[in-house]
Image (tube, helix red, strand yellow):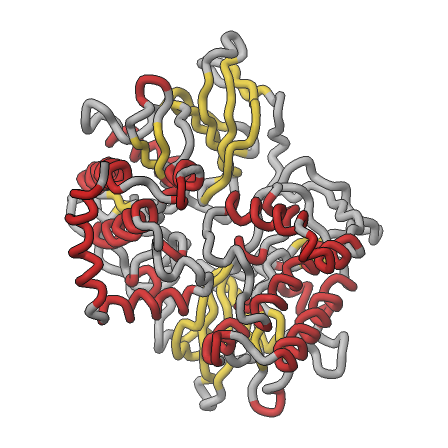
Length: 534
């Protein structure tokens, strides 16, 4: 495989990007989101700093144009310039200050005072209200997506990142028809229950996310589920807490916002695949049973052979996108073909069939059982015994070793991306989801030249430090993620940073913990723990 074009745009400090209006010199990378990347820049003729982003979508332009003049002190950044280059689009905007997430981290107890928290939250809600007024929903409201202004606007809160925003009105100004199923969109701790359930979202879901934000930035205990990172665990807690009498106030708050959130098909989300859909290939016809999950690749469905319902498989589906030159399923197929025969009991699922339709590619594979994340959740204390945890971890590392042997890195190792087999293979661990895997060798079998900067790829609690720092990753980064996995599934206290959801906070803790002497003590606990295990 060649370099991933979506990762490397050749933009680094000192890069000059010109438009019909001006020339912009890149100072540094500020951050990344669903939209692409944001850089700080200055004009080549002046030392005036501002921000620009690459790979924006038209929703962003529409939102900023429509809503920016809604109030005297707008909560939306102003557009300065925009344009396109051969490999990317760019949008130049007003520069803002630190996010509420970063500011919160600096405060005693990592929360604002009640007055500051409520004042900030009211502005956040005003921004949300303005967005809804023009027929858009944000779908990813959280402290990291709000920031304070600079200079005389330092007390103004700005709403950011419309990368997964959605228009909910049709051309007639009516609510769009709801879709049957939608992908998870958002950030787990702040996502609404509708988002977790893969049902259509509307303004009330932004309000629910805003309420979680209010609790997160104002109350010392914060969100009760912030220590969890698995989607299903968080959903269970959000559902359970609504049933308890102590949160009757929350129930009243949410019940007042039960407006219908109806919308029409969104092309990138809805491929028309639902239970009962028949997908045919030259080999067989497959009947969809249910949606199993989603990842970087697209969606996974449980299917059966139409002629023999006892033959069950997993089918991965990836939408065809003009903006994506390389299919993620092609990477998956390449890996599974190469590595599946590496050992007698392979840790890679076998390919049953593959094909393409007008709007998507599909891959039919061997069906596996529950993920390590789901299995861990059912155990006492939500961890495996030392012997089970180490045994599973060794198989996870074997799978990782086989992958590296063929010149690939996974970049998203975590308990949710390993699963047990079924039947006679129930004790075999399988590695899953190669949606963001990368080939690190060139055609000559040599390591590719490292890129200057890369996008964050992975899952925050399990990401390597190099991943956090946006530097090139290699096999050692998979090994670092594997070590975090080992701690997560085996030790009751788990990862110390699992209670955090902000990338920079987690990075700080990962860096700090390496400097502390207590880490060496933790390492020496492992042999004694093994001796004590049954």
